Image (spheres, rainbow, N blue to C red):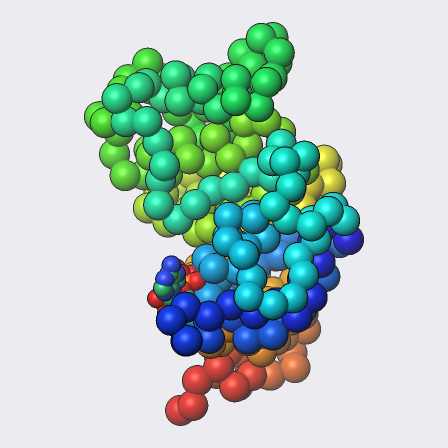
Length: 239
Ligand SMILES: Nc1ncnc2c1ncn2[C@@H]1O[C@H](COP(=O)(O)OP(=O)(O)OP(=O)(O)O)[C@@H](O)[C@H]1O
């Protein structure tokens, strides 16, 4: 398993945000994490990343307990809010992270060019990030998450604020990374068309997983036309 969550729990100020939750994610899967605002998606991703400790339960990534230094190069993380050096250029940001991961110079140059091209920022790399639009900053964050060619991607709403055409390109690339390079990808989303592209969907409500299956199986089981309806019928919301 790439990710094993065993009965993890997390509370903030006595409010339970993740109820005992277990999940096993094998290699080469694209998993979508769905649920209303505040249901615990970001908290879950931060715990898998090792940035936040669960109160109870165990988290293993590549069979190592998180946080683990060796895992840092294996995991590409894109946070919901962009953490960029705005007084540096796009290229300087990418180079900075590439150096942090100790990529050799040749590979660094290649990865900077590849990730920038992937998010269509090649022509803007020499501009300071403070001059970027919100969508451009999002795209740069995604490029940074991919810079060290990680085997596991944790992407927290990667396409919010990105225009529809580029969104399609980015999803095509995520599917390619999964299919051709066997990357494992965990992505949070509110977009139904994106949920459709996932191998499995994990639906969260109040920190509990109320459904976990393929998009097709979920729609068939609940005789639902979309995932909002699946969510309601699975007990996500009382009508
Ligand atoms: N550091 C913190 N301290 C206190 N409460 C927190 C903290 N982080 C998250 N929470 C609370 O935990 C709950 C879950 O938050 P989380 O960010 O995981 O939700 P989410 O599902 O990612 O939401 P969204 O879709 O809006 O991003 C929310 O009620 C939030 O207010």
